[in-house]
Amino acid sequence: MRHLFLNDSASLFPNWQEAFPEAAFASPKQLKECPRGTVWLRTTAPAELASLVPAVRALNPQLPLVVLADEPDEAVAFQVISLGAAGYCNSRAAPEVLHTVARVVHNGGRWLGQSLMRRLLATLAGRLDNWRALDKHLADDDARLAKLLLQGRNYAEIAQEFGIPEAVVPHSVSALFSRAGVQDSLQLLLKAGQAA
Image 1 (cartoon, rainbow, N blue to C red):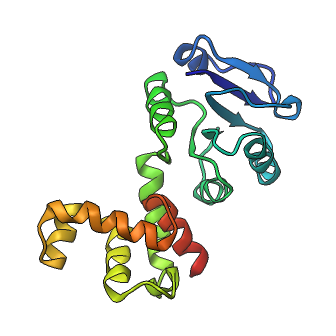
Image 2 (image 1 turned 90 degrees about the vertical axis):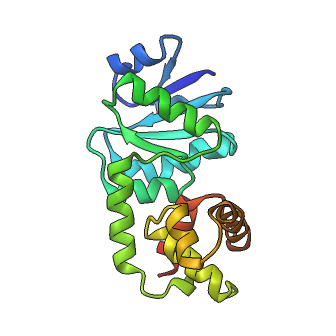
């Protein structure tokens, strides 16, 4: 897997080099085409992310893009994930964490980090009064399941709430994602936040 770090300052951070010694470096404004692999984007001007993330995504929509932040912020995390980034993490994360992030996004997952995800869930859960606003076509059971997922409930708790075997829950969750037009819980969360 190749790694390209886009950074508007002069170099790769030492933790990036340690994690991915073969990584390439470029300025975000110099990028003309995206190689295969993972692109990591850091800018010292977070306001530019609204244009940079879509510009990088336009070069290759299938590309795993991770935004790096010197001081992670839940509002910025919400923004970049909504714009299509696959991940958002601290630019000074340990090499082991960067490897984990790369593996998750390379396999189609999303990465926010556990503490940021908890804060984001808590913030949005507090704002979401109308769970059915996710999609007016969701059945009552789907709306109930969406609510439980967005509250951070695990499969065992969901199974107990519905009175069904735990083995059935992943299928129900997958079917909900399909009907809601999302791929995972994070996208469901984002859609819920936009609908509220």
